[in-house]
Image (cartoon, rainbow, N blue to C red; front, side, top):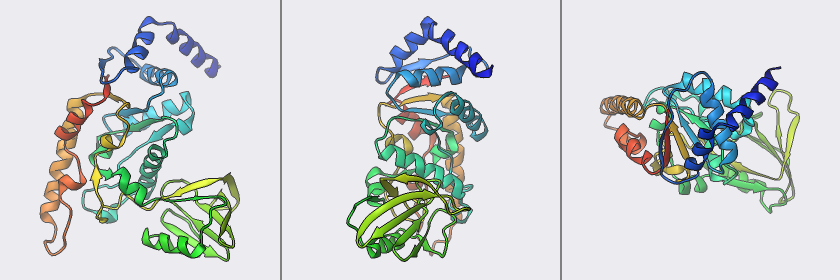
Amino acid sequence: MQQLSTQNIIKTYEQIVENKQLVQLLSKEKQQIQILNLVGSSLSFIISESFKKIDKQFLLIFNDKEEAAYYLNDLEQLLNDKDVLFYPGSYRRPYQIEEVDNANVLLRSEVLNRLNSRKKPAVIVTYPDALFEQVVTKAELNRNTLKIGVNDNLSLDFVNEVLFEYHFNRVDFVTEPGEFSVRGGIIDVFSFSNDEPYRIEFFGNDVDSIRTFDVETQLSTEKLTKVSIMPNVENKALDEKRDSFLKYISPKTVVFTKNTDLFADRLNKLFSKAEEEFNKLATAISHSKPDELFCNGKLLKNQLKDFTTVEI
């Protein structure tokens, strides 16, 4: 009954003239669009139906994490959940590296990996606190990504060495991102770019098979032909070039925002806190400056001008 109701709403929406006009506008570059008088889940329908018709990435910036999670759930129901990605913040406080949220780091890395792999466009749901943090540039991400495919000629020792360089921990059994184990001709590795670990089997110096597996049962879940292994690229202690997330995504991306002034104001407050934390740090240890790790409101507001934006 619920499915039928959803289909009826979609059918009705497709017949509305404004829907066709919106799709035409979204197909163009650098458009500034406003949508007014939306109620309930109407925004979710507009986004999902527009996304189906346009071959472009969508970036949705909501006011906070709770609102973003609400629309994420909506859109996962209306679209294939593999095409709806959540991009959260990774740290609870600037310069407090030990307060990392590993689950969020994994989600952020999955988004970067998806964008870098040039797979089909996705709907990315986020909020100001997540965009506040800069990300490694595409060049740095490529340099810090180990790509392995079935039949690749690759020594197990080489993979072992690279994983140590990526600051992965060697353990008996992998349970969380950033760990790997070696048993005979098999490497289990939990990349920061996937929510399940990989099991890579070697036959001599050739990659014989790659599978994902369940940490609890150790049973294989999916057979793969190639994988990308990424370290924790959110580690602010690493000395790597960074830029805003808006510089990472395609210029053809359509950006939906609830209120750009509120968005900029929230970023400025976060940046001020980062500056306060930076000034408290011990001078004996060298730390990156706030503008090398974080974004302020003025910067991202200016960068939004390079995209087609839809203000709700």
